[in-house]
Length: 208
Image (cartoon, rainbow, N blue to C red; front, side):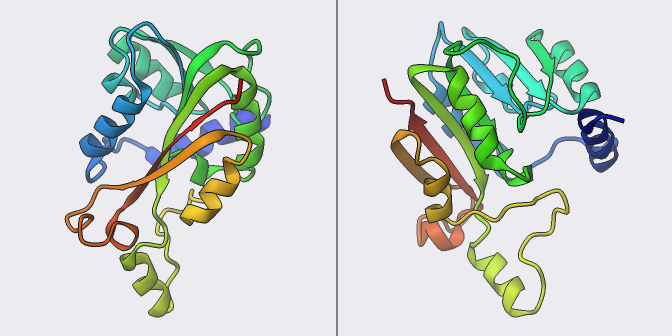
């Protein structure tokens, strides 16, 4: 069995028949959609799953969705009619250099054993001046810190392999220019974004 087949099996089992509900998903999606922009852009959506996030910026843009879960990709096609590719983002992406205006990775990087490899691959397929937009959990928010103090792991999702501080996220994006990290989602974000936000939303530009 290939690595891609194993990942497909793992994520099919992990997600099962659960519906895609994420607290604050619309808030996160709205912010990411505003950073993606359009219309008329060629967009690569990595880890698109069934298109729950993709739908917020698909209209007017040409979107290609990539995921390891083939059944999720089938649902994305049914839902949005987008082009999809079954692929592992930690390996070379099956696209020519400088193909896309924007690459999106919403809640993906924390699942990867080698996120730097994925970032390197996606950077290659971005056009010069193109933007990388995405999000990762704020693993060091107050709730996670309290879990750690109580002797529990700060992350409850077994498929999350990385914990990103804002500084670690910026280091991962050090091959890009104009890196911005914002804090979003949560009832008390306005009082202390770093401690209260569930999500870090980022944007970065490929030099050129």
